[in-house]
Amino acid sequence: MGVLIAPSLLSADFAALGKDIAAVERGGADLLHVDVMDGHFVPNLSIGPPVVRAIHRVATIPLDVHLMLDNPDDYLTAFIDAGASRITVHVEVLPHLHRTLQVLRNAGIKAGVAINPSTPVAALEEIAADVDQVLLMSVNPGFGGQTFIPRSESKIRAVRALLDAAGNDAPVSVDGGVDHSNAHRIVAAGAGILIAGQAIFGSGDAERATRELRAQVDGAHDLRTRVDRPHDLREQVDGEGPAG
Ligand code: DX5
Ligand code: ZN
Image (cartoon, rainbow, N blue to C red; front, side, top):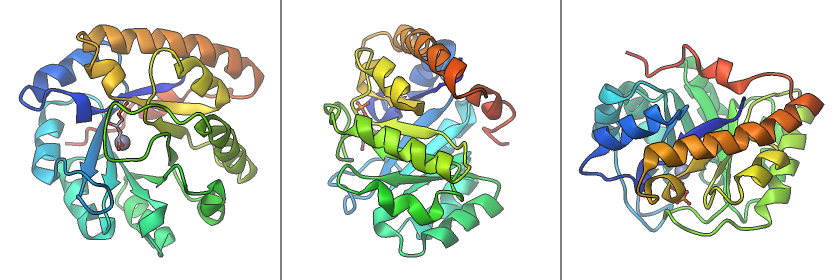
């Protein structure tokens, strides 16, 4: 136990979001990952605050909102008001990242920072003590269903080590190409949150795919917990959103 499963709604049926959300909740999902894209930072468009608000109305687990925007600062309040529990912004677009994280934390939101595959882990050095989660992109952001970039595995270890050195037990969240074949290794490398879109919603049975992913990583995490990670991340989610 301990690793969080966050199905990415990007691969859900947008005409039946409520049904798909209920399915992954029954399967034991811990968070709902919501991808927001602006057509600038990434070459795709997705959804905005009104849809996040609608998701929040039906969800019983917290919303983990991933902002793939050139100007996330302009939209923080809108996504906080829409019901986000966690908001992740990209280091690549924020010269005043420390301030952005403070805004989120002051609003009671868990503050996440994301890095793209080409962004060095060192970009997180100065804020490693100030984040509630680090999202490591294991594909280039913009689309679901891409293949996990193998080098990401060593990056997970490096981010975990950086956070540990900063005395921060915030989880490393891994986003892109996570599936039932590689989840075990991703968790063994130090991931605390697994985001999965296509592996869950492309499977034909989202409830079952969530449950299977959960079972798989629980085994991997049990091994690692005995060695060096004594706490349970799932306890942290209890009591967190979706805020009223
Ligand atoms: C990609 C998004 C991901 C995406 C992952 O830009 O950030 O959350 O939905 O999808 P899969 O798991 O299909 O790679
Ligand atoms: Zn994402």
